[in-house]
Image 1 (cartoon, rainbow, N blue to C red):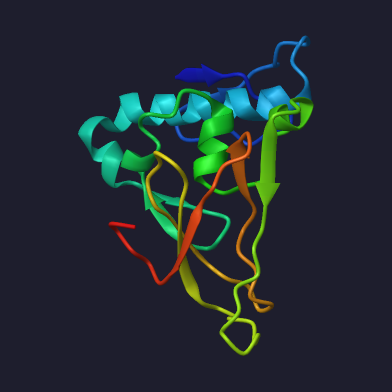
Image 2: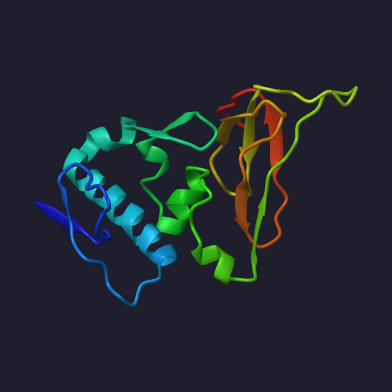
Length: 156
């Protein structure tokens, strides 16, 4: 059985056991280390099938494991999943996080609407606005221009 640096009381994932985390880790960096270790272990365990595994985003959509394969850190995985869990970035001064409210030309909010966000050099990120027309929170390293499209576009 593989061991991941989980904190006592955490629920183990498939093929993982709970072990005491490094006391030098903050809870923020531990969460990032845990998700990175889990995703890395899943890549090894599932092999080629990992790319088609569904992972839930904070926007309520699923992305395939292939979207996570090239992630270099837990922070990057959380960002791709659109989950606002990574606290590591909050310790840095060069990151931005924003949520957007989508409206039509008359200013009426677009509730429960599919959207696609494209960050520079990144893959499309799909989501669904909430009942107030708001997207999930999106994080970038530094100030960046992003594009938002209505609908789920694969080639945005």
